[in-house]
Amino acid sequence: MPIPLRTWSTLPQKEKDKIIRRSKQDIRDYSEEVIPIIEDVKKRGNKALIEYCNTFGTKKISSASKLRLTKEEIQKSIQKLDTTIKTELYRAYINTRSFHEHYKVNKGSVMHEVSQGIFAGKKTIAIDSVALYIPHGKGSFPSMVYMLAVPALLAKVRRIVMVSPPNQNGEVDPACVHIANELGIKEIYRMGGAHAIAALAYGTNTIEPVEKIIGPGSAFVTAAKQYVNKDIDVGVPAGPSESMILADGTTNPTNVAYDLCIEAEHGTDSMALVVTHKTEFAKKIVIKLEEILQDAPSASADIIRAVFSHYGAIYLTKNEEESISLVNTIAPEHLMIHSRIPTYYADKISNAGEILLGENTPFSLANYAAGSNAVIPTGGMCRTFSAVSLHDFTKEISLVKATKHGSLSLGASVMTLAQYEGFYFHKKALEQRQNRITEQNKGKHRTKLDQEPERKPERKPERKLERKPERKPEKKLQKKQHKKNRENRDVS
Image: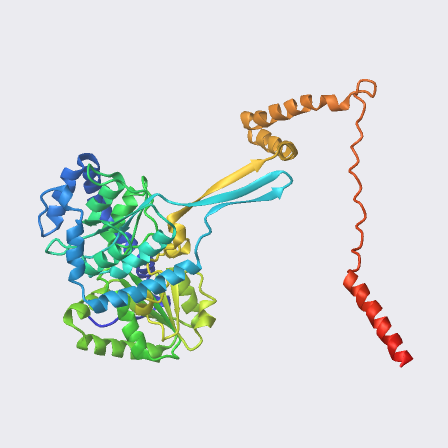
């Protein structure tokens, strides 16, 4: 299929809506399929879970106890991994940790006085448990393990679980197992899909439920997470990959062509777009794309071509203002600015999960090892959501305290507002306190005859004047000796 080159302003509204909604519609289409699976696992537990694992997997599992990797299986899996991969994973982990440590959340309690006698603040603590969902259907993603685990560990989450679909031999990807083990995650399950989401959300006889499930996944998995969201936190809405390149024609079109394919090769449901107001530059990108796809492995090239038949295209705009507006409308997961002045455009972008500045910063760097988190909201949800960070693994509890004076002072205002809103007990709870305090304070307003004689405050003893320290005797001796010497000189 030829690479589509289209003018955005002339597209039918139906085509525009398709790109703006993209995978959201696919997720809705899967809802009817995932709901019965989830409800079945919720009702029948392990029995249903094993049935679905065997239905969707190639390696048959006899019991639920076989889903969790044993210590021996973890070590055996790690031994299969090449030392070079271990080294590079460690380097990527270090950068990711450095990034998240820089933006570390201050835990503990903090309060300040908002008005006289009224104190307000917050207590920041880690959530108790989380499951990291690591996809596998379209490839291996050990990068997702440290992207999710590092902020969870820095936040000090008590229980961290990892789940990942097994390969044809029933094994979890060795690199994923290695990095999880290195980070201290020992509870690893070989399962994925809607049935895994259900087991994590509602628990079974052998799997304890978690408080949060986080991680990217296919439209099918995302649909499952959306369904259980009524009962459990599913974190950042991370579905099929999305990328968008804003190009102004000042960079190398070959680089643009290659960069466009990076996120696209994650799967046929990915989104890959270029937006530019330079027609000739756009045509060069199309030519380069055709060339590199001809030289690419057929498996990768087929995925890229499939993307361009769904959510992939090169869009021409009237000018750079329309290009910027289009980016903010689509709100992509990953945005790369191909320009010699990338910050000029970045300052005008308000809706994007991440912005990669300049042609020296391809999506690959950020996906693996640049430090920033690559688990980013999709489907336009970056309008209100952000990439995964420590905030996803902590919660804030509000703290409020009022002194007696503060309660009296602010109470009058609150009672007025409570009466306006029609809440009797909101007002009464304060009113009876104020009446009681008023009664207690009546004694302070008796006549002079009834009042006890006023006690004058005791005077504190005055501080004695500090005496200056006496000169040291040796200094006096020195003076006398000096005078005597002078007299001796005069006589001589």
